[in-house]
Length: 247
Image (cartoon, rainbow, N blue to C red; front, side):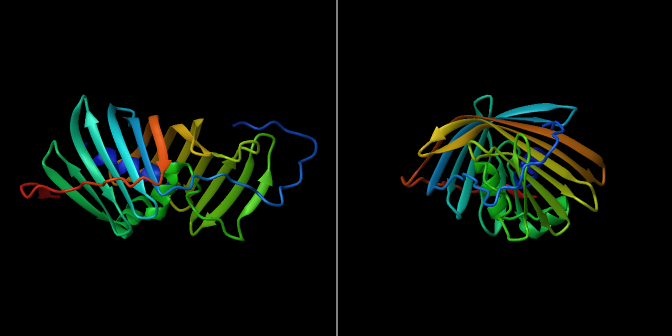
């Protein structure tokens, strides 16, 4: 899998309704309840489609997570493994088996690249459909006609979380960096039960950010065919062949 495609995916993981006018706004909920996925181990299989407006690429992904520890991914294209990734609290390592090379990214460097704070927690949360930024007392809660809204300000990034009041699930996240107008929107859908919770089997990530080469506008679609959580220990095999070059 190409470096650019994986970087766009990570950007989306870090950063992924019209309203009618009503005479009187309902009072804000005093205690906003959000149902989040809790687990020891997660395993999923998904189809991912990358579209940058010029080219569309499709991969199959296997994803494994050990809670608050490590995220492991492998990518295949037409039945042939194209790459793998290992994400932990210190760094992100991406291996391209097609190009026989690998990349290691630290979080400060990625945060500077995208003008969004990048860390392990935000990646794990985005993959699970949980809040990307933990709640704080300064967060604002309001009630709309379709969603409860949790608004957060994190440094120069404004975050808007749209919560379904019936299911208590996060259905949409909007993030915008104020100085650059870089933005990400993540829409979750097709919620299905796993264990005693529900999980979004479909997601669409829309990314808009500036690069030295111009404005990048990319859409990433995720469609899960399998998602499981449990206590059964999973393996995370990961090695880099000696002949592979670091880029």
